[in-house]
Length: 341
Image (cartoon, rainbow, N blue to C red; front, side, top):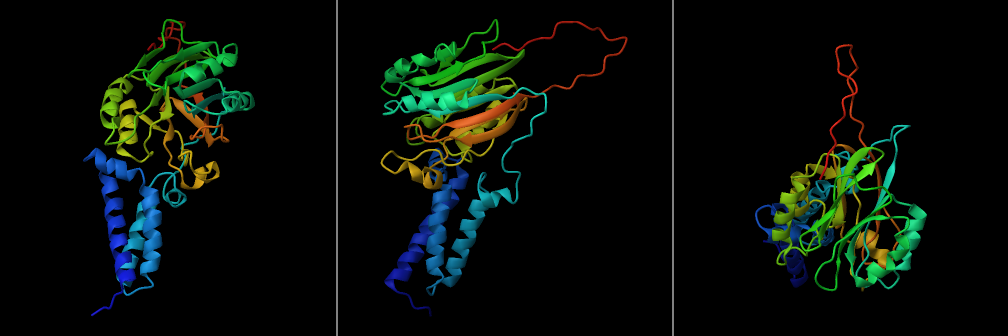
C-alpha cells in the first residue's frame, strides 16, 4: 500500500483536474463551453507538466508519468508550437516569385482607449502597408486616423453601438470598380474588394465577442454564412477572441475555405500584465486567414503599439493562375470575367 502525504495527494488532485480540463478542451465542437476551455490548452499543458514533474518526486510516479505524457501530447498536436513543427509544416509561408508583386497588410486591434494612438501612425510609417485592418475603432480612433486619409483614401469604417467601436479597412489601393465595401454584424465585420494590379482580392476583418458564456457562438454562426460567399482570392483578419486551434476559428476557416496564413503566436495579454510577457504567456487570438488564391510569404507580430494586442503584418501575393498555351483554334482577346462582391 502506497503512503501519501497531504502535499502529494493535493498534487494528484491538481494533476487530475488539469488533465480533465485539458482533455475536454479538445471537444469544442460538442459544446462551446469545452471550446472556451480549449483556448487555454497550452497554459493547461504547462501547468500539467509542472505538476507532473512534482508528482514524479512522490509515491504517485505512475500518475506523474501519465500526466507528463498527456501534457507533451497535447502540445505536440497544437498548431504553432515548436514541438508541433517537428511533425507538421508549421507556417504556411511560400517563397515569392521573382517578378510577383508583394503586398503588405497590417492587422491591429488598436484598443478603443489606446493611450498612445500615435504609435500606430509611427508603425504605419515604418511598415508602409498597402492595406490596414482595424478593430475597436472608437470615436477617439476615428479622429486620430485622419492623418492617414491622404495615404489611404479608400476606406470603410463601420460604426458599432457602445464605446468599443467597430472595424475598419483602410487601403492605398482602390476598391474594385463596380463593388461597394460593406459592414454587417452591427459593425463588427467589414468586407471590401480591392483592385491589386488588376487582381480582385477580397479583404474582410472581424471582431468576435468573448467565448461562451458570452455571445461568440451565435456570432460565429452568423458570420459563417457570410464567409461562405468569399472568393478563393480573399483574406480574413481580425481579433477573433479565440485560439487558432479552437472550434470557433476552425469553423470560420472551413466556412471561408481558408487556411491559417501562418502561426502568429501569443498576441494578447490583460493590460495589467507587463507587455513584455505577452510573447511568452499571452493568448494567440489575432489571426490572418487566406484563401487558396493568396500566397502568404510572411506573417510576423510587430512591436507594442499601446494596445493590449500586438499588431500583425502579412506579406502576400495573389496567386498566379496557370494559363493554357494558346492554340490557333483558341479565341484570343475575349474579356476575362472579374469577381465582384
